[in-house]
Length: 73
Image (cartoon, rainbow, N blue to C red; front, side, top):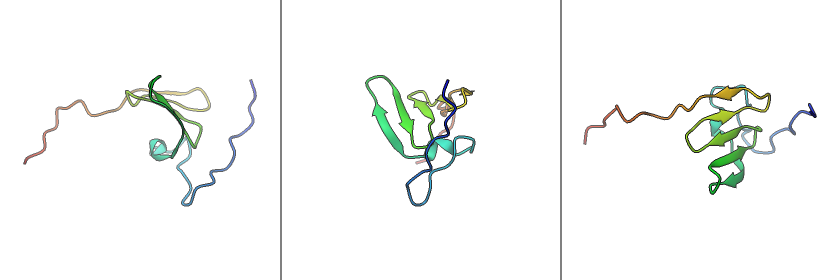
């Protein structure tokens, strides 16, 4: 497998790196809603259930809110 690093982020301010906790805030570079995933600028594949696949193969489990929290009107 090719281990070439991803190109530097061209955005200003730069997108979070794949190792950062806020990695999901990177800009979408390739949207595939029909398949349920997006490719982010930092090389992360983010799925519609909020799970992520990092460029190094690490899997991040879905982490969306479960709906248990309620906001008062």
